[in-house]
Length: 180
Image 1 (cartoon, rainbow, N blue to C red):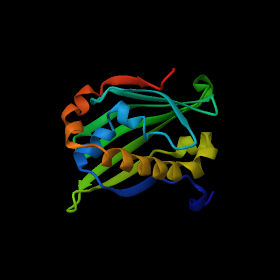
Image 2: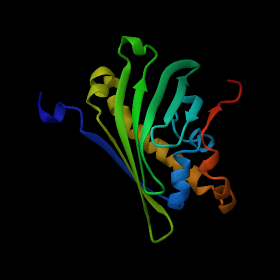
Image 3: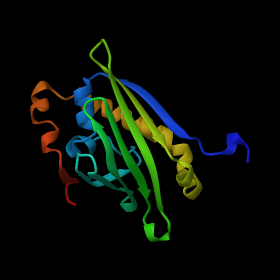
């Protein structure tokens, strides 16, 4: 296999968000905010659970056209507010007992910009097993992150100073879609 045929070491997406690093960081940990951006447009978020502390878990159940497509699940490795967030991010299919479980790593880096915005860098790595086991996800991963970051910008940019007062202290919760 040539190097060009191998799975990339990482997918890297960068975006400038018109919101402070604090607001962007909050949108990465608050389940009520995450539900507005954490899955690409072709998926429906069914339920989300976030325990925003090092070692805490994150779970995002999703479906497409009313049929479960599994979930994302992970564990926070680093929470350095408001600069860096690192977490294991596993793609769990509908049959994890049959091997539909692919552990990856996501690094989020936030850097304040002079214009009061935030430069967001997402580095999604350890993708080899995912792309071997679920090759259909390979062409979808980078566009999926780009789509999610577009939605993140709308969510974080819409937060006000008053919203910051309640911040992530209230975020250790589960948030279900209406009717679930």
